[in-house]
Length: 160
Image 1 (cartoon, helix red, strand yellow):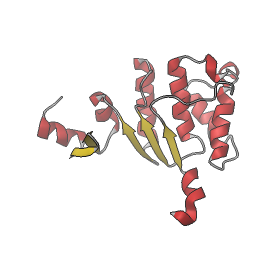
Image 2 (spheres, rainbow, N blue to C red):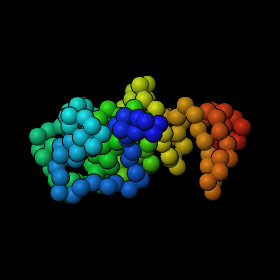
Image 3 (spheres, rainbow, N blue to C red):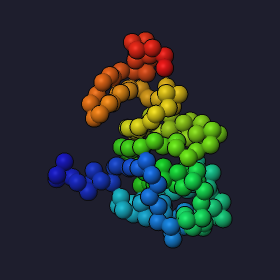
Image 4 (cartoon, rainbow, N blue to C red):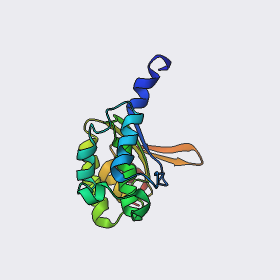
């Protein structure tokens, strides 16, 4: 790992629980920044990400991040995690601040993206876990209390 740290950094994306965006960058600039930070040209998969997040109009691309709604900021934070075509993605409460329609759209997109990537996410929503996770770990006070598929854990511990 130590010998290939730049390569490893370029392959990792992270979306924290609380959005951390540069208020005075536009949506486009925000994604370019994260792509370049990962060593990419800056626009490698930005068009695709903006389209998926329904922010591909010229007006949306040029909007300052400080002017976005909470849900739109969340979408951009998620897109930043995937910027540069990262292969290992960490998503902390990815659907917080999203309306039900955006949440479902994101789920559908994440299901497609997990085919060619490893996605680790935290969630308090069991419906989200059922929809997205192949493997599940229940953690309490920093310790793994249970692990398995969502179905296996439901069978073992009940449906809720």
